[in-house]
Length: 350
Image (cartoon, rainbow, N blue to C red; front, side):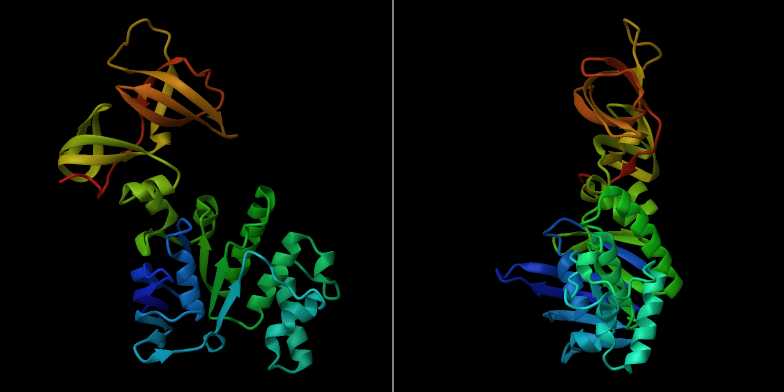
């Protein structure tokens, strides 16, 4: 039995439309799972359902074999053993760092609560900050105090709502690495809610990509990225090129030629081809040689370690991710080569 199970959960919003509908998700103990989706995907509703802020209309939610929500059952949030960290640290401004962390430990003797709070602060690199007030801390330090406050009671599940939202890109990386290390050392089960694909793929053991109140695909970041099931998932995780074609077994005939695919493709299909699966080579020949595909560069976008090119080829516009030092600009001629694998999508026409 999975540690945390969401079985056919449905909840409608104030307009009467489903915020989540028949949602299915299983999380193992100690696992970090990221719920990834747009603002209307239902991921925030999942967080509220697990936290116990709302009650599902149907379905069952269980934690370690205990039913938290289901027919005739609803356990209040304060009795669930679930910690929650919002994107805003929401610290008590009049309390010290130590007292902010100890706030959720009111049932313990004061000395024990402070000892546990200090130990948690040390784990998060905040040893010696006990007496400071929130306004004396950086936003990164405030977020770490909020995490310490959520972790100190020893939650069975920790819910993270965009915890890196207010951090700049450099701080996001360092905070993400440190937090994952701490959570893994404690064996905490984590649900991260985010619309940041990069953060989700780097932080989570598995991704659950949500769309319209349902989980569209779940799996390791590597598997979901390399083998998206639908065009939506492919686009949402880093962008893609969609190519129609005709399958004949382990190959598909497309405007880029015959592309090998995994599995068995028959009839009309739709392929996902990641931008890095294509390669551009400057074309200095007056005519195409060796059957190479001719392309015209329409635009170039510098992205630091790579550059993204939009090219016209065979009557289509394609996105290609390549080295930034490529001597190609808008109007350049190039040859286009397929160097990666295409994936057959479930969106393929019948």
